[in-house]
Amino acid sequence: MNFDADRLEARLMSHGVYVTSLDYDDEGIEIEYESIAAGRTDAVPHREVGRVINVVRDLTETPGNLHGSVTDLDGEWVGSWRADGQWLRALEDDDLSEVDFSQRVIETIDDS
Image (cartoon, rainbow, N blue to C red; front, top):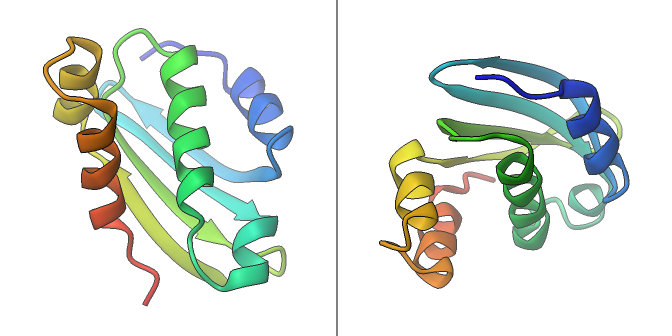
């Protein structure tokens, strides 16, 4: 997978998402980030997950699996989520609607 990690971090920072760890290979991307919004609610903000996914989609040609781990600004774990690479490809090919894709991702959120 080829993309500009610095550009990803800069774009996410403009949304209040501060990348603390980023690992990627041909299989996908694992991103850990601090979230201002998550710290306020002690939950993974759904809209913010969507922003992270959209920025990754904008900066990658064919996204693989995407896994996010969310902490508050103190580094305390808030939750995690994932977007399966098959879902992302189906979304790009118009075989999956935005609503169905979003619902699948929301169902993976673990903030317990």
